[in-house]
Length: 166
Image 1 (tube, rainbow, N blue to C red):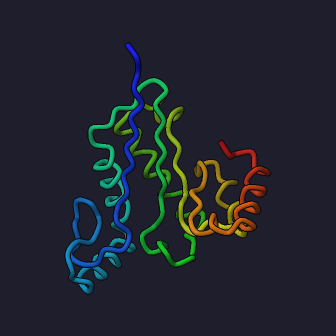
Image 2: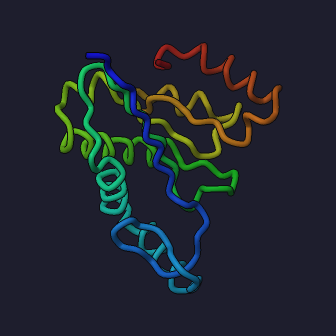
């Protein structure tokens, strides 16, 4: 029986403002002040629960078996579109939260061999090494820096010099 590759891309809206959806950890409708208050509470310690829930909802109905691969990119909501990256310790911590969530969903061996967690927030040629040198950060999803050939080439050259890159 032939196998079929299935890809599911889950992208949560970045800049919706309005009513806060606790289930998904995102804003809905058009109530910006209320949403900003919820985002502040998220930044103050509720982020673990929200990120766990987003991963659980995003992977609902997904089955990883055999050689199926899963890539997850993490970026703190406050960093989106700002050009300001999170510090490495924060990213590493959230990657550990995501990895534990994956282990709670899938067998540990599948998570260890078939999943990669990337950092996707404001990565550029000045900070790529700090992120990739950390063994708990599996790579980087390059955003706007990839639109500038010189910057992108510099990022690739720096990343190639680090042994942790998959």
